[in-house]
Image 1 (cartoon, rainbow, N blue to C red):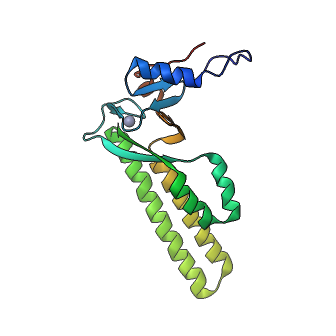
Image 2 (spheres, rainbow, N blue to C red; image 1 turned 45 degrees about the vertical axis):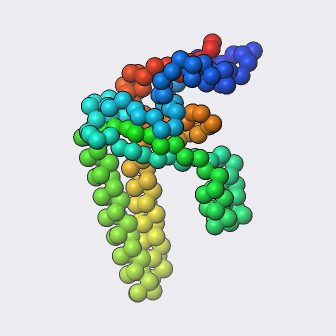
Length: 185
Ligand SMILES: [Zn+2]
């Protein structure tokens, strides 16, 4: 974080090198969680810092450069194939407390029911040949899928670099327990 200084040279490479020298494999950097791929986070909930339910969860996160989304305009399939090849992967072992585990499962259940209902409405619309009903079903299904994706995600990857992965979405209390990612001022 810190204030913006136009005379400050780019420091990200330097700070990454220094953090590597200091050891460890997970840090906080403002609101970001910064990890080395394959790291195991402390056994506390990444959202609220309460003790995590054991065993900890093995999660895999993917990222590619955002510019790749432009390929979607050339074709969704082309984008999917390229993204599959160029995406980077970071496995992380992390914890959630009982409360956040329950909330995640509840969100997934709501999303599943919503998607199923949407499918039913689509079928009804198609069967009775009523276009607005079909579209309502499609909207309900897409909304349920989005809700499921957002409601069940553990962390949001903002970048996977050569040595470090950055996440948003970890709780402030959890981040406060991690050492700070080295930053020159
Ligand atoms: Zn929690």
